[in-house]
Image 1 (cartoon, helix red, strand yellow):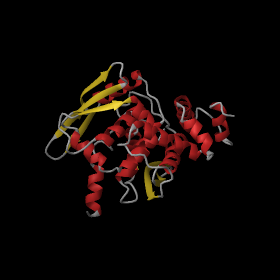
Image 2 (tube, helix red, strand yellow):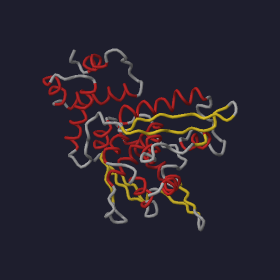
Image 3 (cartoon, helix red, strand yellow):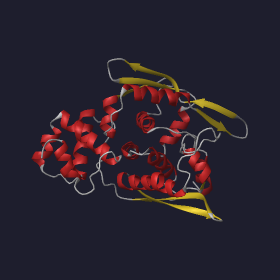
Length: 306
């Protein structure tokens, strides 16, 4: 495939470049849905999601209300697809059904959206989908999508900052809501730098960005993507949820430098300790917990093991 054709495909990826402000919960649902898609599926295939499976992959707990609001909002979003012949409006779901008392819900995709989701999935390997689920910043998740879309070229196109902000939901194209992070220093600190750090720490990419000025103000942003050797253990989506949960727990302990096998076994043998491990890790990654000097020591204290 020549570069011009590659550029054309990437510029027209409907879902990746769509303007939407998905929450972290919604992006977790989207990435986990991609992991389940198979080309041989029937058009009316029903995909079942267990809350515990998503938690095992991400270390985050989404309650029933959060998930219900997330899918309701996702289902109401319209995606516009336009070429020289037609303009189409398509929606994500045909139906979402929550099974009361079972901690799960079923999704049936709209027939029109399926080709675009497979188009999006083609940008990811199973490993990359797991990486996307690990990212805690919703902006990191979106920028990771862009990086995956352009990974074989090594750099993205130059995004007009206004376009980029609308893609990330930072600016309302209709001007009805106030713009977020309007100052470039805030955009760098709260969005770009956080995304770069999380992507570089948790995925197979090492990325950076360049803000380009026109006159006295910044007008565009471009991202550069290099492959790096993955640091974390690969988690397969087809493994039993408990095995995945234990593997993720061991991975987190390894990241904190906890190597004592007896201590590791004690933590991974306890449902409550694993739950608290995931909670601590999520709070630390999102800044809710501060532990710059000795996160391992604080973790063991929180777990009641020190």
